[in-house]
Every structure is written in C-alpha cells, then in structure tokens.
Image (cartoon, rainbow, N blue to C red; front, top):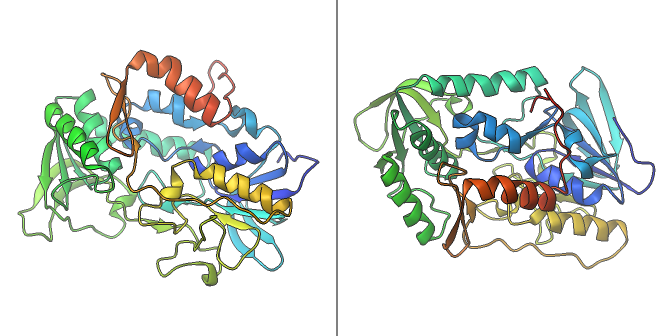
Length: 380
C-alpha cells in the first residue's frame, strides 16, 4: 500500500466509478486511502458494451489503479470494510489475503455502491476471478440464438440495443414492466431510444412483470420466464436479468445512519446524517429515487466538502438532483455514441471522434485526470 506523507487522511470505502473520481480530486492535498473489493478498477457502466464488445469496453472501463495519474501516492487496500466506529473515526478492514487492518481517518467517504446485478457486486475477488466472470458472461451471450433482457432501465436497454447492433442474427426481446422503458429520462430521450430499438429490430414486450427467482440477477439465466402480469411463459437461450434490484453495500455501517431500505442518509451537502466528517456519494447514498449522486458530477461536491471540513470551513456545497437522467443510454455502436441532455436533446459523436476526442480527452483526461499508456501485453 502506497502512502502520502503529508495532509490529513481521507479514507474512501469503495473504489468503483464514484470512489475513484473522489480520490482523484483529493489525492494531491491529502493522504488518501481507498478500500476496494476488486484489485483493479472495474466500472459498472455500459453493461451492453461489456457483454457484446468486451475489448472496447476493457479499453475504457477496466484499469489498473496505477493507470490513473491522479491516484499516484494513493494507498489501495484490497479487501472489505467490516465496521466503522463513527465516534473513534476508524474503519476496520478485512483484507483479501486474510489479514485485517484498522484505519484512522480525518474524513470518511462512503462510496460502496449497491449490488444490483452480476456486473455490480460487493464480492471480494482476485484478478483472475474478475477476468473469469467477465469471460463467462461474454461467452454465454456469444453462443446464444435468442436473448431475453428483463428490465426497463438503461442497463437493460443498452444490452438489448448492443446485441442487435453487433449481432443482427440474434433474436432479442426486451421485457419491461411499464408501457415504456427509461422512466427516469426525459420523454424526448425515451422516444429517440425507442425509435433506435425499433430500427434495430429489438422486440419490446411492455407490461411484462417477470417472476424473479431468488438471486437470479446475480447471474445470466436460461430457460423459461414466467410473469406475474398474466402473460404466458417465454423462453430464451440466455436471460439477462437487469431489473435494477438494488441492495446497498452497507452491512459495515451502524443502523443509525441508514434509511429503512439500508441506504445511507445524507443531507444536501452529501454529509452523512448526524456526523461532521463523513460523506456518502453514489448509488449507496439516499439522495433521491434515482440515486443521482452516482452521476451529475457529485464527486466534485464531495471532494470540495471534504476539503472544507478538513480546513474548518462551515460553508459546504449543496447537491441538487436533476429532474431527468442524462448521458449515454446505449453506448458506443457502429454509428457512434449518442449523448442525451437532461432536456432530451442529443448529439451523435461518430466512432472516430469518440476514439480520438471523447474518451481520451474528455473522459480520460478531463474527468479522471489522465491515464498512463498501457504497456504491451498489459491486461485490462
């Protein structure tokens, strides 16, 4: 574990999409230590590309922590937080190698996310286990002639769309419980995405509420799907359960800081209820029904507020959840990547522009602060 010798200590529990972004904003001024259940950065974004275009997904969403320039000097502990003592300002960590540690902190950031599918889990894994899980999912879909995608959120929609875009020979059916998918998005965004799905030949089955076997969302399924909404059973070679059943990764936290569903209660500054120096951000934070602090640059608010608290300043930034979700819904495809705004307008970035500008400059450099070039033969 690498350590910085100056600055106050900030412990970040969870080094996924949001936790890494917070760490990149604090690493220059403070002694930052991240706790992660995976030995490398495994993004929870772009499920469709992850399953259908794995080599492209790996290039942008699977990285060694050392690849991030702004994580230089950040300590990374591979393991899981087992307990937090809010009075003593300490975190107990059960390490992946069987050992244990106790970390004192001046500020704590909880960014552990939520388990809501086989691609987002709190399971402690080795590098080989991460690679094996990625490979099994890709292989299962590659040999499928028919795929049923269950769910109405962006993960489900992106899987259905990416499959048809890359493999028009595969029969893809999107089963969603409401009249239209993407309920958290602007109506114009929904209309545009539905038109894309129709053009691609994705069969939609609205009003279908599936019976979800226990733990089904944690793996790819096969066989028969039954519905509580009255429709006859359906079958598919592969079933992708992208149902958005979120289980917050908060078992290590005291009940006093959790809401009735187990998410972390926060105020408008994303500070944990009843604390002075503890913040939460991302899917684990109970900000609003869409858990909007997982996006919308909320990592900047948390980083700024951590600095303010450590410097003794009282004024903190307030996070305001937008009315609608925005960004990429279906990811990079043959025609490019379409970026939607909060108001439903969109811009199409061609594949060439995405590869030359969007990812290397806007995502890798401006968002993450720069990525080191990969060495020949480097995995991830």
